[in-house]
Length: 380
Ligand code: FAD
Ligand code: UDP
Image: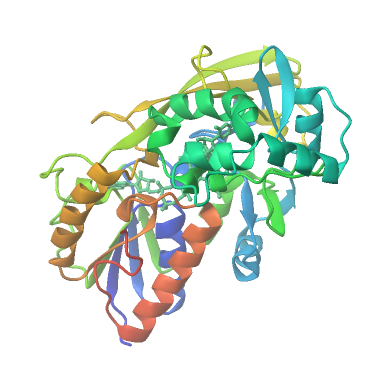
């Protein structure tokens, strides 16, 4: 394939990984981002006062079963061991998440062994639910009403602004239930944290002579003229100037505060009760457990509906949103020489490892075919 001019919109993981691969293949790559930094929502920055590495747009833990993706990130950053161990406060007590044998024994004031706990929870569960469709059904079927009410119902109402009976079971399926004392939030083979943060890692990915990076540069449709192909990792509705209306997102407000010493003794403390207005508090120095800092930077995290000026975080993807998405997809498919990628371009919740996997595959497909359709990964 002859060298072509590529424009990538967004210097997050999608843009950086596709850009790097195409630059390595000899293409001329320009990457623009409207923000003043790279790494998109994974952006990390050291707090000037405390020295703590802050996850600016919320906590990011790298976890994957994909060995090639793990090797890829380790090529650009040194990953140190990190296990995500989440706690939750409910009913005036602190419990361990995801629900495990410790949670069950503490919650019910028992000393059950694994098989006993399994039988005990099975007796609480609503076994009339054969094929759970909603979040609520999934919870009632697998943990029963007590644990559902204490840990999931209020948190989910706050997080999504919707009753768990209106949300798909798939959201809760992201969390395991364990009948042993394993309190690792994730069950993937590889898990870790980049020693110098994600922004440093993305800077290394972008460090290639064939890549030109332009920050503080918002892209608008039409700016792609003069390029052979555009990869767009911004919001798909934004590409079309929101002309059919905005797709529904949840946004987050982070209320930052500092503390001398150790505020909560762990990185993530969830708050399951509806009466507490925030969903969780994150204490960022605990995301880098190999570092020592006297001071501490914490975020109280509030979730709400995303307005036009807000940062879109979680795609809602209910029936209404999917109908609108269908219309934007049809418009996108009528474009030529532009491919919509990543979390916002395809309006899906994507973890970092999946984002990188899709970006690597997208770049390979482009190199093989010399062009690509609007979507390599169908958003619907
Ligand atoms: P983004 O990171 O959103 O990058 C898109 C970039 O495009 C942005 O920099 C934006 O400024 C730019 N852009 C958009 N529109 C334009 C435009 N018109 N012109 C120019 N630039 C534009 N994943 C995990 O694996 N582990 C976690 O623990 C985890 N935690 C998360 C926590 C939160 C709160 C959220 C929201 C996500 C989390 N994720 C996590 C997912 C992770 O953030 C994504 O996988 C990743 O950011 C996707 O990368 P991306 O490049 O597709 O999108
Ligand atoms: N959840 C909950 N209570 C918790 C943690 C999570 O009810 O203490 C629910 C919530 O609806 C969330 C989903 O489980 O969206 C998946 O949890 P995860 O930690 O993956 O949340 P996300 O990555 O969506 O923030």
